[in-house]
Image 1: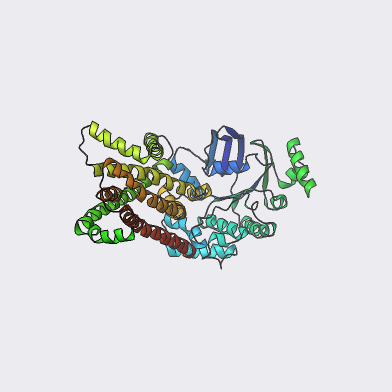
Image 2: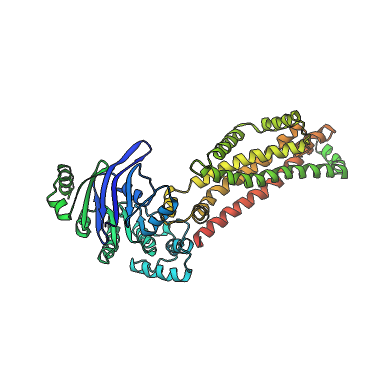
Length: 246
Length: 231
């Protein structure tokens, strides 16, 4: 049984259809990367999985349980299992690094502050920010903020981590640290869905690559297949363009 | 002219006039304070209500929006006269002061709710997205994420509004509320020099409004300092 199973997902922003029928399944321990041109619906798909956008058709099942998007409890249950990291980090601007990473376990899970803070310190040290506990987001570089955002997600001990173009807003020299962090998580067996334009990284870290275009999945395969021997013309076109670019 | 003012001074600041001016000042103060206080107490929930989504609050939302849009657009004087004549027409024997009080509360609530709404809306949607995916409740999101970031946007225009508002209570004189502006007309018509009368009133208005601006400035600084320490 796949850990996340999407079938026939359609979604729109207002009158603008974004997803036009997505079928996809993700197993535990897999690192699945979504690639494709801008506007193909990759980020939207992640927003659907964490319940920030309600699909107009189709079903999302997590750990075998179909999500009822009208049920607050269902949405909360999904968010307990799945954490998302956003392109723009979305750190709480009024809180320190430590507070950003501990507020949810303390306020939502009602866990003891001391215990949560100890865990958060350990995770922040792991992502290289052990010295920045009392800094505010606007005192950090983009790369540091993004690693705080990853730490904030990890403190919740998610079963799956969704990464939405987490390096796209970063200066080039800051990308490497964030990718190192993700690489570390991959080696630890974290299940992840990664939306990224870092093709070399995608190729290296993914167990499965999904090519999306015009709101649907065009091709799914191993990194080698999708990048070196794509089966679909649309994929070949995209891959040849980005490879020519390098 | 200075001679005339000097010769009027003892009589102008006689006990009768002082009590009269004191009452007028108190009345202006009461109208201003009631407007600011009730305005915040009512305006704030209205702003929160208008942020809600879904069908359940739709009727209330529609009423709130109608209320705010109406009273922000109607001149203060028209509101005063409307309340005055409507209360008479339906047989409510409201005192002119009560008419003034009701009017200032309505108008302040509408304006303040709009200032608060703007402040809350100034907090980027990515902050509430992050709060939602962390499973923070709407109340927790408001208290821990939105409000702490919205205050610094809300406070300056709210105090700006208070200052404008104190001056606007002068319009209550038009329906016969004895407040500072009305008192100045009375004293002037009793033969006191206009310069003396209106100069005094001017200083009284300043004395009411200046401390308020200072308080606002102080709050702004405090919020800015707190921001760079802890949340």
